[in-house]
Length: 343
Image: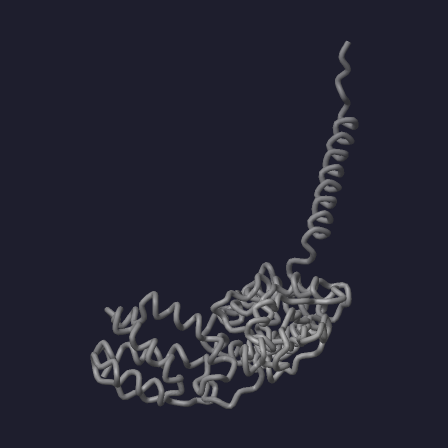
């Protein structure tokens, strides 16, 4: 025989269901907080806290910085973080802190069974006969790879090609049998520390000069304005590549280009006067001539845009007399004047 519940029993059952649902919701909320953390916490503050922590993984820090860079609208900062986390491609110039010194030793055999074992080879001889790329190695590995290399006791490189290049150049009448190159693991630790210190300095400068950067979180973005983007790029240039003295947009400089429509030579000359190296100015001029602008709205073609993205770090490093933050503006104006779209 079935029992019909009384009103008191029905109320108790309903209240128990509500309580169980609340407990389930609370458990779900706690679980999400445990997995994702507080979604309203400032990404910039999280990065600073992680950099100052001995336990934080550098790769994780860089991923958070990449998210922040995207929200701030700085393509150059995004590219730098991307290269640091994924590795630098061969066609991208590495920052100065990623160039390490390589030392070499060699073994020679001489007359009457004589020999010289593991003798140091002077760096200037390597530079003279093989090139400076041998003694100044560009470290293109990702930060994760650099951290693993820093744990090694020895870091050797393949220097077998130097045997022929140095034959008879170090010890006359002695045959070079083998050459070995070595990089100090301390150099890898210095790269790791350089990245961490630049990230910290970058966030501190953003906090002071772009206050809205501190408000960026997983749930909140800030308006991407040209002023913020220019300020972030300027801070990036100063902290990652060091202070530079060339002309930048933040200096309020005005660059006037004198270019005749359809004249590649005048465009090359004008770009050189604006601060580009001769070879770079000629290369860009030839690209624009091959794909001239069709409208004021799209003055640069795909090849021109790819060229700017590839060579932007060179301007940012101070190697060129024109700053990276005005490079695009100068090249855009040059392309428009070449096509006759601007007087």
